[in-house]
Image 1 (cartoon, rainbow, N blue to C red):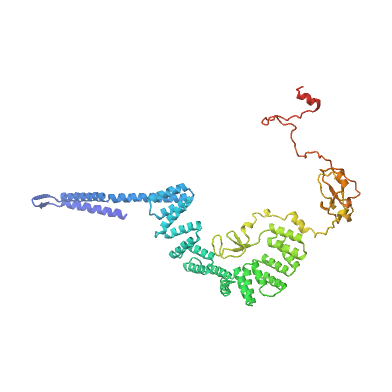
Image 2 (cartoon, helix red, strand yellow):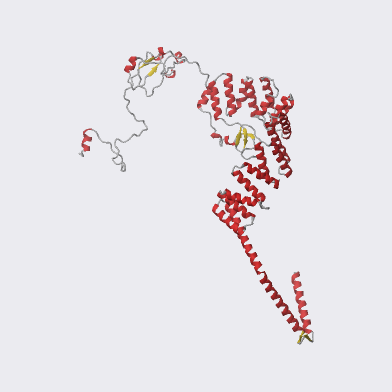
Length: 581
């Protein structure tokens, strides 16, 4: 609205000025040397306006002509830049969906149109990686590392290529250089920390951890936990070489991470050796409440040297009772009691503790039951049955990190290099996908576990065994007590006869056919009628479900059978049928 009012005011002023100029009388004379021009004031103002317009128009033409080359250059540059951006955008999209040829084409276009664009260099390097051209990728990343704006990106690419080439030394050197440029670089600090832990350089790893805390990469609780892990690793390594440093490290670690199982076990060991039994028990109890573990139970049982097995059992029962509210009656506590009860020869106590777990046992439960059977009764058969169940049983918890299962605790994952990655849990690969798919105990295992201890069997002397002629039975097998009709007292101790211990009589050998297999009879079979002898030639009899083969097939194997083939008649009828009669 104000613009409209201002425009109308200007028009009114211009009209008033033009009316005032038109009303002025007189002439305007311009004399220059011998040149004299005389005109009126309105005409002079009009000519002056035309001259000003002509000057402005001429200046615009000159300025346009002067600026045209620059504008053409800028326009061409803008077009190239737009083409380069277009090529970079579509090239990155091609890399995202894995089109190698399209990514390479867009990378070449981006390098032509935008050679100094950092994204063009990135596209070129990633397209080379997608093609598998490692040399070209390293060359591009090296060029990026020489530029100020892409130095960290180039170092990151060189680090990845060094890892792919299994050049651990080169990779850690590149990561250390990246840390010098940017201490807050997460990937570089993670890589250097992992490499130093892998080399066992715990002091260097602690320095990197302090740097991460100063750079704000980790918070205070994570720093305390990771520092406790590194100190525990150093203490475990120096336990046999420098016990003073190991003791100092593990004591600091247990203060930073009281629930760390290896730290609690080693600290309790040092305290027990120093005759600080109460302090050692408190350390183990604090870790047990957070994470029940068999190593903690073992350390708690042997916290006082020289105790008997029954005293260790009482101490383990006390530890098992100290469970948190969310883990009442933890299975690790019950297994620890069973282990201590077996050591104390309290087999009834061990069986009672393991009773809730024998229907669906884990491997440790099955092995403990096998040990009980072997130690209590000397029953090797039932012990073998429990050992067989242990092979098929569910896995127990183990130290697991990133799918890797270890027999001992480690500070760093060997798969990803992540610190404090190992957790005491059941391996994911051993968990059944469906409860119905769990392998059940076989009938043989159940029979072995339910059967009473085997009785001693008395073998009859070879002289009391007679060899009878072969009997007509489809299968040849030793005559057992279950198949005999003898009195009950003779069935309790069947005579076990082997082929090596029996020599057939000469007359029996002569009367029996050579192709038949002799059947050995015990003394309980004497007096019974001898079965019919086995014929020398056994006719081939088809099974009930065997359709058999045709008596005569078609003469041509490629001829198609039409209808049911007729069996050829025998005798004179067959003879005349052959002659077409």
